[in-house]
Length: 261
Image (tube, rainbow, N blue to C red):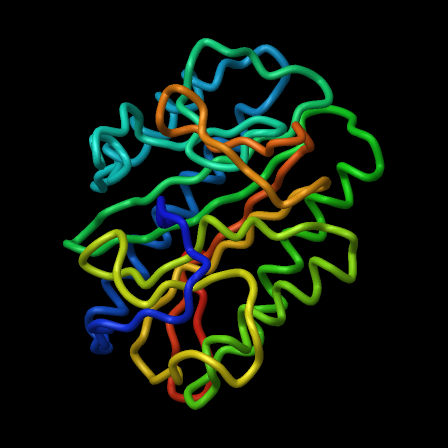
């Protein structure tokens, strides 16, 4: 996700249109991203540390011919962003042990064959309250509410509006300071993809665009702040937050999720 404040209107510079070959290469990177999430999932239990999970992800990516792009990106000190409970994004893996009742968002970018793939999931550790369970379920569904609209000719704002509408209909707030983004040979490319907006606004999607779409939704208010480590973003009211993301290509007739199975 873009580490920036995004509340202004759409900003457009140059949007890279990918060829079929490039999208095929991005799909290889995306598949490794998917497999890495599946590997991490095997190790999620009370008592595991976020640093241990980061090491598992790093080693799995490297072993399978990829590069963990988050490591060193603008000085980020780990291969994954691991955010727990009220941490929205950019949590730095440490010796913190996960415990029963936590939710943990794991977000990372995998580079392979010169192209990036970006995906995030929020996992439930043990038993959580029903409202937290719904937060996780509805954040994931909000992602798919946006994705299912993707096809050439629609406005980017249609995706943003669908995510926002679904979130508000399920009593969740939308983080506005952080947005999704284009992706390709670079981790962050144009356009920005906010999770809020109006229908029929923004750029018109074209075949070959590739977007990282990633709702970040809170159980409480939408306001967030940054911790002193200059990376971790938390909710101001300490309410739980969830985050899901896929890298998605715009195809001739619709879309293809590149970070799926």
